[in-house]
Length: 194
Image (cartoon, rainbow, N blue to C red; front, side, top):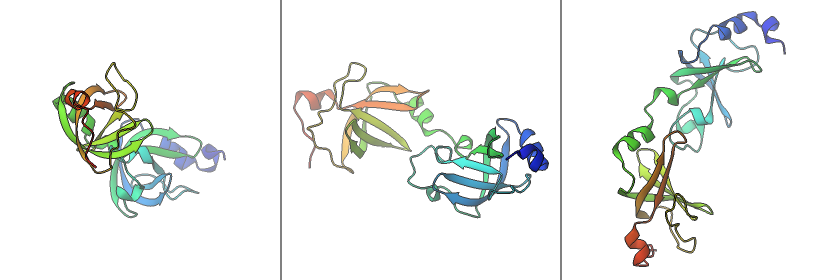
C-alpha cells in the first residue's frame, strides 16, 4: 500500500517523529508478536489497532513468557520512539527504554571473580541459566569460555535449585553474564544436591 498517498495525515505524523521522542498512549491490542498502542497525539491507523507498535524484546529488560506479563489492553503507557516503519506505517516503540537496565546496575556493583548465589532457571544443552536476581540471568556454559572450566553436562542440576557461582565475564554491549562453578566445587568433585 502507498501509505504516503493513501493516508497523508498518518505519514506526516510518523515523519515528524525523532528517535528518542517520548510518546504516550493506550494499549489497543496485544498479539503474540507484539503490542499495538493508540498514540495520544497520533492519528488512527487505517488498518491496524494502533499507530504505535512494541515488539516483544522492547517490552521489558526481564525475560517474559507473554506480553500480558507486562501490559494489558487499555493500560496507559509511555514509550520511546525508535523508528518509523515505512512498510506498515507505524511507529516502532520501546517500553523498556524508559526503565533502568538491571544489567547495568549489576555490572556496576559486581566484579569478575565474585561469588554469588543464584537459582537454576533452565538447563539446556549449552549450559545452565542461573537467575541472579533483579532480572539478571547468567550462563554457566557446558563448554570452556574465556579459559574458565566448563560445567560437566553429566552433572544434574534441577530447575529451582540454589547454587553458588563465580562471575567469569560481564559483556555489557551484548548484555551477557558468564558464570562458572567455584573452584572448590571442581577440586572437591562436589555434585549439586538432588
